[in-house]
Image (cartoon, rainbow, N blue to C red):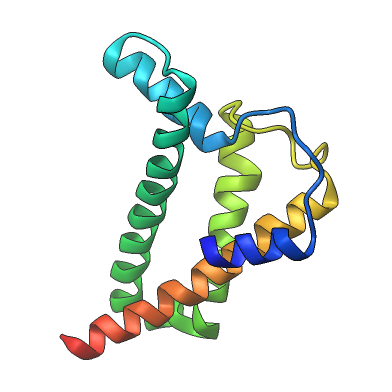
Length: 136
Protein backbone atom coordinates (compact mmCIF):
# COMPACT_ATOMS: atom_id res chain seq x y z
CA UNK A 1 0.00 0.00 0.00
CA UNK A 2 2.83 2.37 0.89
CA UNK A 3 4.59 1.84 -2.45
CA UNK A 4 1.33 2.38 -4.31
CA UNK A 5 0.66 5.59 -2.38
CA UNK A 6 4.12 6.97 -3.12
CA UNK A 7 3.69 6.30 -6.85
CA UNK A 8 0.14 7.68 -6.86
CA UNK A 9 1.24 10.94 -5.23
CA UNK A 10 4.24 11.18 -7.56
CA UNK A 11 1.91 11.03 -10.55
CA UNK A 12 -1.01 12.96 -9.06
CA UNK A 13 -0.03 15.29 -6.22
CA UNK A 14 -2.75 15.58 -3.60
CA UNK A 15 -4.09 18.95 -2.50
CA UNK A 16 -2.20 20.32 0.50
CA UNK A 17 -3.68 19.71 3.94
CA UNK A 18 -3.17 21.78 7.06
CA UNK A 19 -4.23 18.86 9.23
CA UNK A 20 -2.08 16.19 10.86
CA UNK A 21 -2.51 12.65 9.48
CA UNK A 22 -5.14 10.65 11.38
CA UNK A 23 -2.50 8.12 12.42
CA UNK A 24 -0.46 10.85 14.12
CA UNK A 25 -3.55 12.20 15.87
CA UNK A 26 -4.38 8.68 17.09
CA UNK A 27 -0.81 8.16 18.32
CA UNK A 28 -0.97 11.46 20.18
CA UNK A 29 -4.24 10.47 21.86
CA UNK A 30 -2.86 7.08 22.87
CA UNK A 31 0.26 8.71 24.26
CA UNK A 32 -1.85 11.08 26.32
CA UNK A 33 -3.52 8.09 27.93
CA UNK A 34 -0.39 5.95 28.23
CA UNK A 35 2.26 8.48 29.26
CA UNK A 36 0.17 11.45 30.31
CA UNK A 37 1.51 13.94 27.77
CA UNK A 38 1.22 14.73 24.09
CA UNK A 39 3.95 13.56 21.74
CA UNK A 40 6.56 15.91 20.34
CA UNK A 41 6.49 16.48 16.59
CA UNK A 42 9.31 13.97 16.03
CA UNK A 43 7.64 11.39 18.26
CA UNK A 44 4.35 11.85 16.38
CA UNK A 45 6.10 11.43 13.02
CA UNK A 46 7.58 8.12 14.23
CA UNK A 47 4.44 6.89 15.99
CA UNK A 48 2.03 7.65 13.12
CA UNK A 49 3.34 4.91 10.81
CA UNK A 50 3.47 2.49 13.76
CA UNK A 51 -0.24 3.10 14.34
CA UNK A 52 -0.93 2.57 10.64
CA UNK A 53 1.05 -0.70 10.50
CA UNK A 54 -0.59 -1.94 13.70
CA UNK A 55 -4.02 -1.24 12.24
CA UNK A 56 -3.06 -2.96 8.98
CA UNK A 57 -1.66 -5.96 10.80
CA UNK A 58 -4.72 -6.27 13.02
CA UNK A 59 -7.21 -6.01 10.15
CA UNK A 60 -5.06 -8.40 8.09
CA UNK A 61 -5.17 -10.95 10.91
CA UNK A 62 -8.94 -10.60 11.11
CA UNK A 63 -9.13 -11.06 7.33
CA UNK A 64 -6.92 -14.16 7.44
CA UNK A 65 -9.06 -15.72 10.13
CA UNK A 66 -12.34 -14.94 8.38
CA UNK A 67 -10.95 -16.12 5.02
CA UNK A 68 -10.22 -19.53 6.54
CA UNK A 69 -13.66 -19.81 8.15
CA UNK A 70 -15.72 -18.31 5.31
CA UNK A 71 -14.17 -18.89 1.86
CA UNK A 72 -16.50 -16.29 0.31
CA UNK A 73 -14.39 -13.65 2.11
CA UNK A 74 -11.57 -14.43 -0.34
CA UNK A 75 -13.71 -13.57 -3.34
CA UNK A 76 -12.51 -11.05 -5.90
CA UNK A 77 -8.91 -11.28 -4.72
CA UNK A 78 -9.40 -9.31 -1.50
CA UNK A 79 -10.84 -6.22 -3.20
CA UNK A 80 -14.10 -6.29 -1.20
CA UNK A 81 -12.05 -6.54 2.00
CA UNK A 82 -10.00 -3.48 1.03
CA UNK A 83 -13.16 -1.55 0.17
CA UNK A 84 -14.73 -2.53 3.49
CA UNK A 85 -11.65 -1.39 5.46
CA UNK A 86 -11.76 1.93 3.59
CA UNK A 87 -15.47 2.37 4.30
CA UNK A 88 -15.35 1.39 7.97
CA UNK A 89 -12.04 3.04 8.87
CA UNK A 90 -11.59 6.07 6.60
CA UNK A 91 -15.19 7.00 5.97
CA UNK A 92 -16.83 6.11 9.30
CA UNK A 93 -14.49 5.45 12.25
CA UNK A 94 -11.89 8.19 11.71
CA UNK A 95 -14.40 11.03 11.20
CA UNK A 96 -16.57 9.75 14.07
CA UNK A 97 -13.53 9.73 16.38
CA UNK A 98 -12.60 13.25 15.27
CA UNK A 99 -9.35 12.02 13.71
CA UNK A 100 -10.28 13.19 10.21
CA UNK A 101 -12.78 15.49 8.60
CA UNK A 102 -16.06 14.46 7.10
CA UNK A 103 -15.76 12.50 3.84
CA UNK A 104 -18.12 15.07 2.34
CA UNK A 105 -15.62 17.83 3.13
CA UNK A 106 -12.61 15.86 1.86
CA UNK A 107 -11.45 16.67 -1.69
CA UNK A 108 -12.60 14.01 -4.18
CA UNK A 109 -8.99 13.31 -5.22
CA UNK A 110 -8.07 12.47 -1.62
CA UNK A 111 -11.07 10.11 -1.35
CA UNK A 112 -10.07 8.39 -4.64
CA UNK A 113 -6.50 8.04 -3.38
CA UNK A 114 -7.65 6.51 -0.08
CA UNK A 115 -10.10 4.14 -1.78
CA UNK A 116 -7.55 2.97 -4.36
CA UNK A 117 -4.93 2.52 -1.61
CA UNK A 118 -7.26 0.28 0.35
CA UNK A 119 -8.09 -1.79 -2.72
CA UNK A 120 -4.35 -2.38 -3.08
CA UNK A 121 -4.17 -3.28 0.62
CA UNK A 122 -7.00 -5.81 0.23
CA UNK A 123 -5.52 -7.46 -2.84
CA UNK A 124 -2.02 -7.69 -1.34
CA UNK A 125 -3.48 -9.05 1.91
CA UNK A 126 -5.24 -11.81 -0.02
CA UNK A 127 -2.12 -12.53 -2.07
CA UNK A 128 -0.01 -12.87 1.08
CA UNK A 129 -2.69 -14.94 2.81
CA UNK A 130 -2.64 -17.36 -0.11
CA UNK A 131 1.16 -17.61 -0.04
CA UNK A 132 1.25 -18.22 3.72
CA UNK A 133 -1.56 -20.77 3.41
CA UNK A 134 0.32 -22.64 0.68
CA UNK A 135 3.48 -22.69 2.81
CA UNK A 136 1.57 -24.10 5.78
